[in-house]
Length: 112
Image (tube, rainbow, N blue to C red; front, side):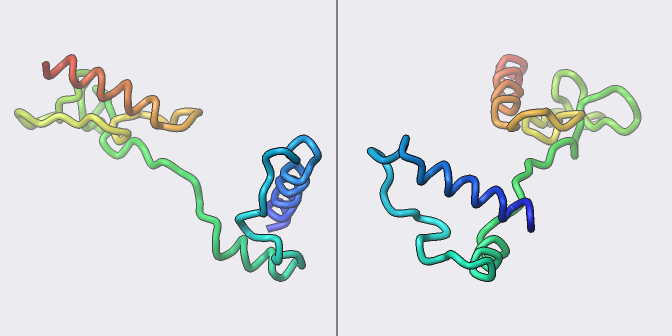
């Protein structure tokens, strides 16, 4: 909570800096009336969510724990492929969107 309070304070400081004078309007969230620590904590507890992208539930591989092969075919099933974030064998170091698009492009080539 302490780190999130500090980060919110930094974000507000940046948003209120003179560099943004020409673009800034009223703060949307948590809003200009949310000022004391109790209000800020209530906002953070109620309006923030974890940011994650689960991957790897049907991971690519050749070992016994893998679900799909390099052609995205499900092991032991005919006519079924998986082409989403679940095939990633490890969590990428970036947002998964670009990786999922690459998987989809590869699937379209394999199927097409």
